[in-house]
Image 1 (cartoon, rainbow, N blue to C red):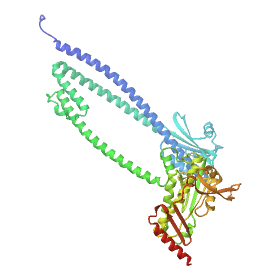
Image 2 (image 1 turned 90 degrees about the vertical axis):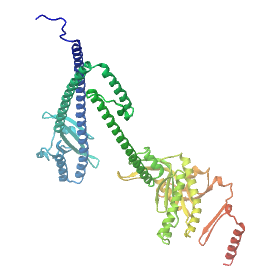
Image 3 (image 1 turned 60 degrees about the vertical axis):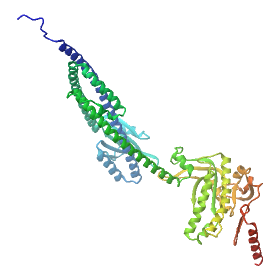
Image 4 (image 1 turned 90 degrees about the horizontal axis):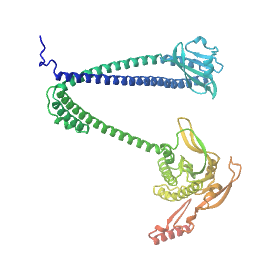
Length: 558
């Protein structure tokens, strides 16, 4: 049968479809291969990182367990509790699958515990690894091959009363880690295979879509795609109402894409609303927690001097046991005959009196920048120069000015106490000294006290003890720093235990700036007599004169 040249055996449409399909398949194969290769490398890197992380976690756990067990061993050895030590180590080995065995040996390589070979106990186990273990001064991690398997040995030196005694050696096997690595490798291979399957499916779907695109008119497909692109842009900007603007398409891939887009926009809208609600809830929880922490910090601040509180919470000082020498000005005060007064007062009255007194003294101390060390009953201990200092001289001046204001404040406090029904007059004696003291955190690991100690602190306390009622005694060191600001009189010479030389004391009379002014107040108080006058505030002078005249006449008749 002769061939007919007018017959189209293979139309150009199919040729074009075949050419585009071949190009598309080639591109898909190339891109898929690149993607699979890249993803394989990424997954391998992820596996290596996971192995390294698991190994690091094992080493860290091993170090923590070894450190804790070494502490227990040291305690048992110090108490000669060898059976308890053996039980603790045996229990540690039994409770940890990755712990192969443990060894405890002293400096002479005498074995006290060997969980793998108990028959080696009380024998000298001398080999290169044992000798190397005794050379370490701190916790060490060693990796080595044993019977063709990688193992990790953690060596912890053991000390008794700060003296080296021996070592604790824990040998960990990596069999469990190897099993986890094998499982991870299997999971990675499954991910790679799944990725290949997904890529093949994607390639097939792509070829089908490509064939359909060539088969149908480009215009029919281009316009809806442009519409969906614009709607996607609006959706990315947060306009979730775009799903209502999508026109209805036929039941083909484009229609599925349109409906999927509608569902996606609705799901995004719902997720956004949930996320926004969660964000508001989380913000409220954070605010509530922040407020709780603020209130808690305010409560804790009442138990610390403000300077100490700020230095700790700002990170300037670390909460640990440390001390240092520093030039400080130390202040002591107490109420004269306070113990005797407590016997004649009700506890509620005494509590009110003491709290009002300490509150006023604390407020004055804080205004002058003093660090309140402690309240001991009616006694107050304050120092200047740490954790914040303005300079040796400035600290001493601030301390003395504080003491003078405290003495003046007692005048008003006594008036208030009389109004509250407390007729017994209270007088305070004070002592101040300047010198080098040891300051810092003293105590245990669980309970610290920020305070000062030293002979100069004792001297300040002795000055306060030797002061009379209403008197402020300062040492010569303090006097030399404040003499330009304060009027002082030379007082007695003290012989203080712990100080080889006699201590010259000075009594603080008043401030230099008050010398040129006339006192507007007059106060005097002793047994059976109490008088307090503020000349600047007397409104009825004649009445005051009459009262004084009547009092004078009654005194003359006695």
